[in-house]
Image 1 (spheres, helix red, strand yellow):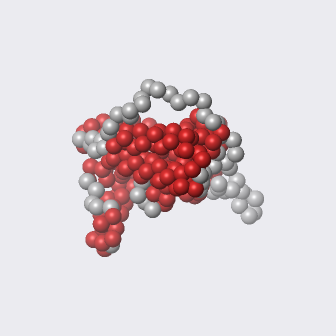
Image 2 (tube, rainbow, N blue to C red):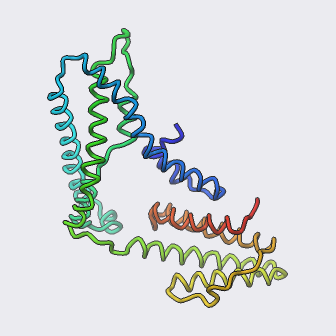
Image 3 (cartoon, helix red, strand yellow):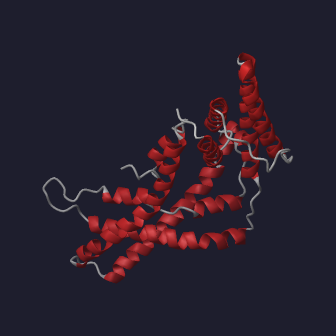
Length: 294
């Protein structure tokens, strides 16, 4: 379904399909997808759980045993992730030198956070609900209701217990923001703006008659670059007048150069998907401000 965008496959498709589509389509899609992903899980659990409990009440499984099963499975899910994350983080690096150079050893505190944040959600629920109601001889699928019940409890347990314990765990481990994402974002913004400015210089060589609009755009991008580099823009607080059609067209070409650059940087693993989305959102807003119609 469209709103199961948090699954690994569709997430990868959505991420690496970050083509220069219209800003309003991406903005609406992201907002609706984020809201539906979180709400859909709990709505479906709320609708299905009473039916599952009624079905289980007809079996010879007592409530204490159900609780014991749920606690045991939840504990196993959390423990197995912790036992897997640490070896998966540290063992490949001595074997693959290229990986070690590109991604040095992480601090054990950071790996602990990754190991602990194994909350279950849409994927687990979809896998459980994908079980057929009956088998080939039309008899009920064995223990389907029990599997659904345990899946619901694991989702709730990991979201509530691990989710609520995450802030105290971060404080206890002494983890603080090192500013790496901000630095990554700053470098990507700087390179994207420099690419846009270079594109404007190329246009100026071929279309000298557009000197006025090009000069205005160059000033704007030079101010952007100075801002990113830490300098205050010279014309801060002095908004531009209404855009001409030529200014809108040239601005659109510069924005496309920015967009192509950050997508290339993401595809080359220079920046993360989160940084891509941050910068892409600003480019979308700039495109909305121009009201450019293709």
